Image 1 (cartoon, helix red, strand yellow):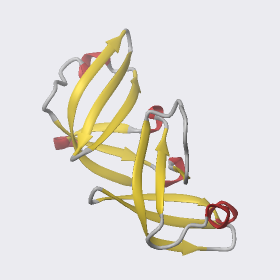
Image 2: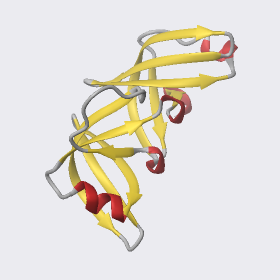
Image 3: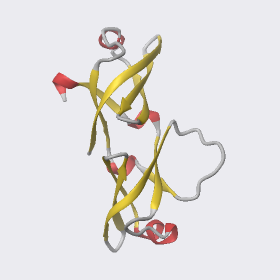
Amino acid sequence: MNRLPAEIIGIDMQGSIALIDAAAGKLRFTAMLVGAPQEIETWQAGMPVTLLFKEAEVSLARHLSGMISMRNRIAGTVTALEPGKLLTRVTLDAEGHRIESVITTRSAIALGLAIGVGAEALIKANEVSVMPLEQA
């Protein structure tokens, strides 16, 4: 599980859906939360949180250009590869934050991933969970 310390920088709510914008240092993330509007209404800008997302929910890309609907597009550098027959665990350094992804080994080979290579982590907003710091 990826865990990044962050701070809420903005919240948009409508009914039981909220878009939470958070900063982890220079990195910007968006999380889409459904339900628990009473709890979210107590959250505010400046509140420390932990962002959580599974390694299997992190897609990787290289040389990506153009528009994309994924709100979380994080540039990083490959710092570790653990290739297996079917799956490969890839670790990126993104502005000093460690982000891990598990992708197929076929994809890792097709992307030409190697230590020191640049890649982008792509995470859909609905795959990012936000926990107030005292609960994390």
